[in-house]
Image 1: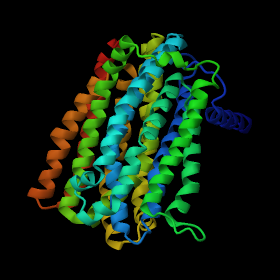
Image 2 (image 1 turned 30 degrees about the vertical axis):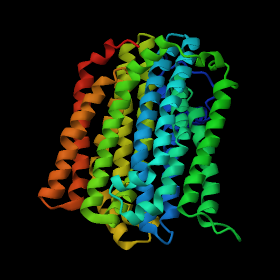
Image 3 (image 1 turned 90 degrees about the vertical axis):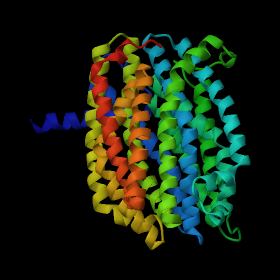
Image 4 (image 1 turned 90 degrees about the horizontal axis):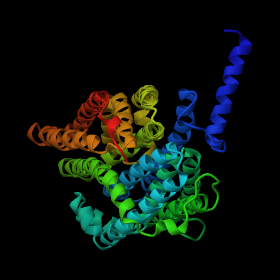
Length: 474
């Protein structure tokens, strides 16, 4: 290959990356170069998920250097574990929104796509209202139930109340981004997280540590900063959702309850929510098992490792979201072969990414842990946890693509059954046996995670190849 040709190819790749970040040009994802389609979607989606994980890392870093750092880190980690139930609601509903909106866009029916988005927002707001109230009332009891000590639960209850009370910002941030992903406008979703994180990064050090004569609010300040940052990101989303899009806008009248639309959304979303609730409950049980087996230090170490692992895994989830959009839009355009090829191409890219992250983790895990906690015992446990859990990274990456491919097609039941058997009938019992009967304590819990995730990924590949997802109507 000659030098001018190489330069031209590099220039084209650079232009493509800029285009994906700007999100300004219209692109038909049901036609043209498939690699270009994946890149246009994947780059902003990966950056979006990186930025979502930054919230937890900023909190983790700041509270890890407070006076009661083990209590603070444990509280942030356990609260994030509980919030995974909210995340499950968000992801399930946003996945339904992505699938239905993408299918309508593929059918060239933006009005129906906008109504589906509005009805999904209506459903999510009503459900989240109940969860927020329960979280505010039972904050301390939630931490105790998760295995926190009495002193740690008392210390962290205000943090939980603020995070649960403001969880509508989490729901809307996820859900509206799911709508934008369905339309193929992943750049808006990414930019909303940029704004939210920028605000959080500015506010969190001030609210946690203080500035000048203001001494800060410690752990409570982290919750206030995070909730405020997310809320500002939601305001940005709403501006584009209602006022600033030429091809896709939600109108206020589309929020009027439509039982037929609500039924069709619930039909797709309910098993989707279940599939993520199943996974979330498994993580909650594992967190409690670690806390019961190793105490507050083991729990803090596990939560530190988990937050860092999620920081690297969320971009992979973002990349796999590209498969959901491509499958949905191409099924709407009756391009089933193109939908299939898009999934395997995305899986290939995700496996490469996770392989690189696995090598990085093995090389620098110790340095990362020391950065996020000043407790030597917590850092040691966290290092062990990340070493063990990262052994399954490549399978995690492939499995994510398979799950999102099913969900993007509207087949939300298949990954739900996979999760049920993989998490509840394999991961939880295996972790319990290794931790309690073999007396491996928290190490046994760490080992159960990559074993179960690998099994889940293999099951997803086998079932995707069977092709039943191609028959789904939404």
